[in-house]
Image (cartoon, rainbow, N blue to C red; front, side, top):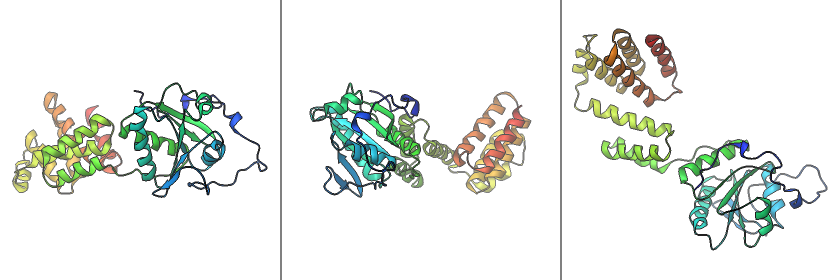
Amino acid sequence: MSDPRITSSIFTRGAVDLSALRTPTPSPTPAPVQAGPPAGAPGGAVGGVTVVDVTEATFQSEVLERSLTTPVVVDFWAEWCQPCKQLSPVLERLAVEGGGAWVLAKVDVDANPRLAQMFRVQGIPMVYAVVGGQPVDAFSGVVPEPQLRQWIQAVLKAGGVAAPEPEDPRLDEADDALMSGDLDVAEQAYRKILAETPTDAAAEAGLAQVGLARRVAGADPQAALAAAADPDDVDAQLLAADIEVLSGLAEQAYQRLVGLVRRTAGDDREKVRQHLVGLFTIAGPEDPAVASARRALASALF
């Protein structure tokens, strides 16, 4: 199974020769094509998004011209192909989810062998992204839905389409478990997301929140802050920082732990550093307080 490669360098322009599919048009600038099929076109509009069955005769209008204004994802499939029956329904569902940001064009390779030959299709399912009249990326085989979502987002970006990230039901379930206090279920859900999508920042933040919730469970906030009066009590300082984050005083918590990094060494220092980085993960790298605290931490360490 191949992973989708989110890069435009997989092709050089013209590597797939589509010139034979183009026919002369009277106007050098094609009219804008809406994200929907022309009257009588094969395929159907599902949920406001077009899923088009494409043939060699309709390829120019349905794919090449349409891609000048709307990214087109071309799915090469066949009725006998079992992996195609796994991938194609997911692509169709994501096209509906996309709300018109992109169009799915389906090509039956048995009925359109010349198209498959031009795209150098050696195995199916094979999926191409076409933007501005040219293929920009491709992958073969069945890929996990999270990676497929990432690939489509990259295609939309290549096409200059500002499409919002679709909501991830896996995150919704994990967040619901966290909010209800079911930390074991929440942790398992976040870890599953990260196993499938290791760079998912929302899941990383959620997992960090699970750790925070466990650390403060049963703690008396006032007593914890009072115990932190001893500036050299590492555990008391860490708990106080956790309480401050939960109280909306994250910047104060960061300052507390940066100061503790400066006063400690060896294993204690590393323990404090890791704790602070975990608190950064909850807020995310875009938070200005995190950016400032990271600079202060770097200064304290070096």
